[in-house]
Structures are given as C-alpha cells and as structure tokens.
Length: 103
Image (cartoon, rainbow, N blue to C red; front, side, top):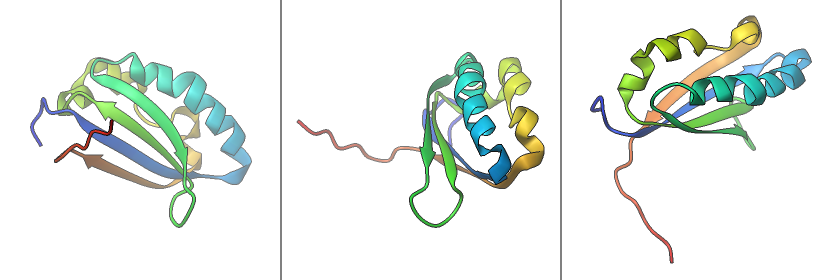
C-alpha cells in the first residue's frame, strides 16, 4: 500500500463485560475526538458485530499510512485505561479497488 493512499482501517476487539459500558463511553467521548484530532484521520464510526467474532469494531477512514507515524497519533493510540481489559484485538487495513455510485 502506498504511503499516501487513502484506506479504511478497521479495529475489532472484545472487552471484558464489566467494562463494556465505560469502554463504550470512553471510545466515543475521548478516543474518537483524540484520533480525529490527529493529522490524516478523516472519519470514525463504531460498530457492533451481529454474528461471529469480536463484539466491537471501529472503522476509520485514513489519509495514508503516514498518519500512523505522526507524533499526535503516537500520543493517543491504543485503548487508554482499558488496555488491560481488551481481548481478541484484530486489525484490518483495506484499500479501495473499485467504486459503485448509485443515483
């Protein structure tokens, strides 16, 4: 993947059940604003799995791989106070190969 090519970054995790509510609140109120304040982080959305696999996902639109190299990103990456309670971490990085527009 080219360093300056926009892509989708997906993070999938489980969180210990007793921390789910606080984790969800922290994610939306702190983590998303912190990440979106970093250069190259363009949008963020939180999702809940409807099937097998990790329960929670976050999907980000990122301007390029360079966004992971900024000082700002290094200050806010990770799961903050919930790091010890996160399980089954998985990450996907997807680049577009085609686009379909609807009218």
